[in-house]
Each structure stands twice: as structure tokens, then as C-alpha cells.
Image 1 (cartoon, helix red, strand yellow):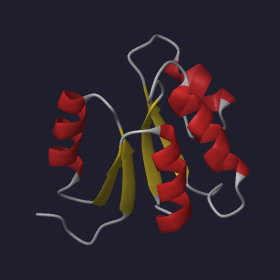
Image 2 (cartoon, rainbow, N blue to C red; image 1 turned 90 degrees about the vertical axis):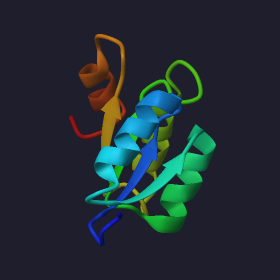
Image 3 (cartoon, one colour; image 1 turned 45 degrees about the vertical axis):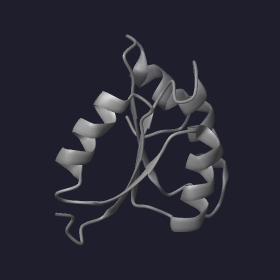
Length: 102
């Protein structure tokens, strides 16, 4: 059951990880699930969520990092807190470089 918590965009293209995060986060947040960098930016511009949880490699290597830069470059969306997740060793450096929130 989804409550009336904060709005959260979940941009994870791995189906297993996404299903687990939807179960856990959907209890406390209104979720909008997207599967590509283009869909992510469009959804952020339309809904202006409180938080975007983004796979750093959404849609391919570095796709989430590029999407984060786009979100942070738009006046309407630059205040959105962006949390990057990644299976690589360097997600914090890449998040900071993309102006996300480490």
C-alpha cells in the first residue's frame, strides 16, 4: 500500500533490483518508475519529485550520470535530490561529478 509520503522517481532498469526497491520504498513514498534516461528527464520535468533514485548506468554505461546532469541543469528540477546507485566501485565520485547528492 502506497502512503502519501514524498514523491520519488525510481530509475532502475534492472528488473530484480527495481522490484525489490518498489516493494520497500513503495510503503513510504509515492513512486514513479521509469526505465530510460529520456523518460527520467521528462518525468522529472512533469512531476518535479522530491527525490530521484537513479542507476548510474541507466540505459547503458553512464546514462544515469548524463540524466543527473540534465536534471541539475534545468531550473525547474535542479533542487531535486538525486541519489545514484551503481554496481561499480566509483559511484560517489560519479555522483558528485554529475552534481548529485552524495
